[in-house]
Length: 500
Image 1 (cartoon, rainbow, N blue to C red):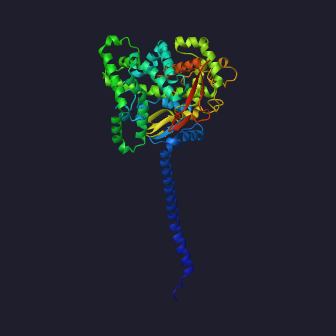
Image 2: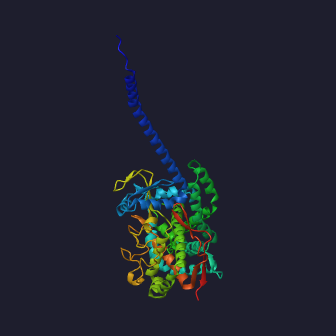
Image 3: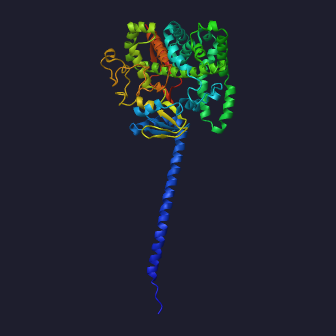
């Protein structure tokens, strides 16, 4: 008798076998599809983040800072993936990193494209290879020389305001700031005789904008087209050549008339004197150095001064105490020594906190893989930064951070009883600390910050002495954002009515 097949049992066993065999495969397939979809969505979001960064970058950084609760966080930018740190320990990691690990110069090259936008000045990615004489020039020689510049600076400010403001009263705030800053910086950099060269000074006035606009065009250009577009741009930037060759002629004249040059006290002469002797810099190389310092000095100073004028107009209650200060002993001391004015110093510092030009600072490019002390890993070629803007609006660092308090950084007994006390006590505009990263961090801090403070105080001093300033359009939006920058809106006017 033949055995009977149990068809239901065989069917069940076959189904169970298929189920056991196929189900894991289907599960693995589904998991792979899900991972692929997640990866594709993440990559697509990353591309969107990069494309929209010029408009949304500041907002994204601020939101990520709030979510991070003090931990490191990462943001994608068109240039590189950025790792941003805000805790004192991680900021200290940036400060003590070697030049071979983290480089400001390499990050600046990525942003500015100097070989195309700065008359061909393609500097080294690593700091210090060709010397850093400019640091002594700005931090020591220029700073020590500031008191002697006061009569000339006050004359420049008076003439510039007379020419730009005149009797009409209303004038574009940024254009006025740029004009007066350019004239004062020209006096400090090139000396009084060169400032009289109108073609040269016009080129110097336009140089920074040419660099910024040119760099922005190249940052928006596909990478394979950058060399061609950059070469065409270099050919079109005629004012840069006027500025560059004017500097070369000035330097060659100084070198040829050495005895006469010994009487010059300006940045050009100090660059000549501090240039590395073993490398025998040519006049062209010295001119490049002056142009790089000029860019770093004028553009940021003019923008910061514009915001200080905006805030003076927006918070008129500070005019009387600031005016009382300049009319008293502190004002006389400032005119003699070139420093002081604690209330104005605090007002300028609060203005920089309230409207910082940059959202990030301590920007560095990793020249090799870098690991922070908390284990945060940064790949070679990526950037590290400090989220300056969000930190300056953090209540944990600045009590009542959402309120403008012009005297929050002044001594309590000087500023009065209404000031919000800072946990660390009084501080100066030019100070450097873990929380005040406006001037950078570690070994690479702004050596020209004392010049910036000096110029801003002199302009504010003159305005308080002579005018009752007010915004022409009080309801308008006075700033705009681009990438990580906050900039003055075009067409914003201040009404400078003569003080009665």
